[in-house]
Image (cartoon, rainbow, N blue to C red; front, top):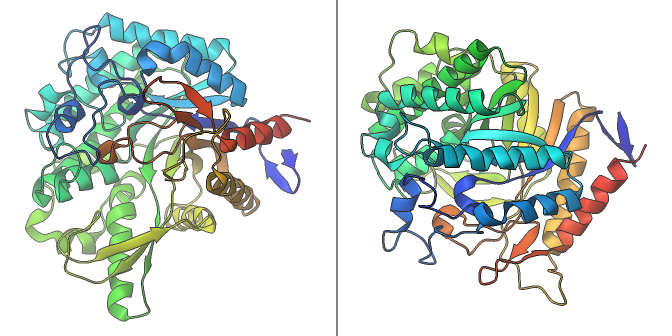
Length: 443
């Protein structure tokens, strides 16, 4: 164990930052890359809050070497990033795009040369528009396409990458993209939504199966957003609504992976919206993972109501707001252990939504984020003291970037991104994290 004050972390703990291809890369139609669903969605008027798009984003595709230098300066020993499916398979399947594979090969080699461990996500809401046009995740053919894509990436990079994530937050992206319709692809059809969620979980399992069959060393898991869902009052209706929200947003997607079935009561409650399950799906979905990635940001306050807001479905509840709650990180990990038993866990995202002011004299002051990191790293230590098998922590995010339907308004990076010059300017939180990691590395 390594000690920082009273905080104890396991030897070999991965300390890193996380990004996603669509949010930082830009180069949206360069070097043979095909269009993705978010390229199409973000070009539609009125879909992005500030009217922007991610055609250039942070221009990471052209600035990746200097971005890796930022990682090295921070002192992280790990970096979580995603591969853009349409950059390596423009049509979703078939002939690979060698230029795309070469880009990620250079990225992986650059990380290893700097002593940084890559953790690679296969799908971070980033699939080819060609597949979306054929029904997206509601079409079971997409399951087979994902397995083909996963096999290609494993074959290309598994000699150098030992940590894999199949999917990032299918709960958030599919509920909002296909249920409420406020993000890509912008569909509001709850039957399509639940069928797509089922199919994407089968696709996850198919990718795990491909990895196992490849006999490559390393580990593979899935990342889910697991937040707290708490009642606004002690009114029984609010308590019931919070319980419903907790199942819908957390356990509905994790139960089949760890228990081999859906919540029976929740499934029956869906009625005609319930997904069609084919023979063998549960057996495949419950193939064991090596770890669970947890994205934790806040707790949500839930009230019984009839409006479909946030990730709500069928008018069962309304998410009235959320709040930063560091101890909730410990609570959600305890909840996972109580429901599924002991699991290896990585905190694959944890960060603070702010609208940071521009830097002064070369430094951006973000005291709230500094406090956020202090509080949540202490929560990590507490979780480990309570017996949670935590193996790593990734701050979201390396730099300010395109935040989906919010555009460039929220800033979550450790580095301030100037979207005119593309300069990355350290925030005070970057200095704090760097100092924290420096102290951590000392014997």
